[in-house]
Length: 230
Image 1: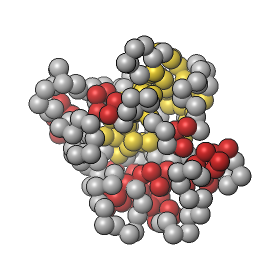
Image 2 (image 1 turned 45 degrees about the horizontal axis):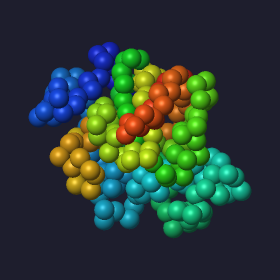
Image 3 (image 1 turned 90 degrees about the vertical axis):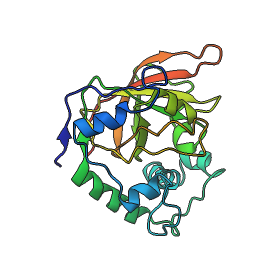
Image 4 (image 1 turned 30 degrees about the vertical axis):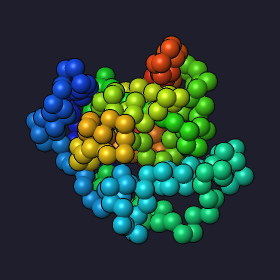
């Protein structure tokens, strides 16, 4: 699979060093990153709310995890309180095929030392990994796609008050796509753009470092990609 290789380290804008939130857009323009604005990507982001052809990220990633772990698994027991276990009414295969097609045409890879962030909460496809108690050296396999942000502040919006912040590097080993840098009105920091990157499904990472929660800060789990998805 072809991909655009970017050797420059990703920017990590915040409200202090980038109050107008222009750094990410400037990086995209400078390196001519292809923007993924296809219907399947907009639906994945839940920007396209009228689509019946594709699924939003939460439903898609739930069923990809269910396929991976099985209907009699611990994952299924965790998930059944929030999600159905029957995918017949969901366009999972169509969504995967369309997203994989976008990755095949617009994938990028970034420098090994680039950092991206992900706030995780109480969704079953996060709970299955026990990020609140996971330890250094353990591996984490994501059967689904992984949405991350180059902006730490934005990622924290999705961790809420009791979640965990993932800090991820090793983006030279996984294909990534870049959606439009839009704002999400329903998040706490609605004035802060998403700064989003989506990682290809079936990626494995290893825990390299843990920073325990102190006061109002979130527990941080530092991960590094260790294999290329097929």
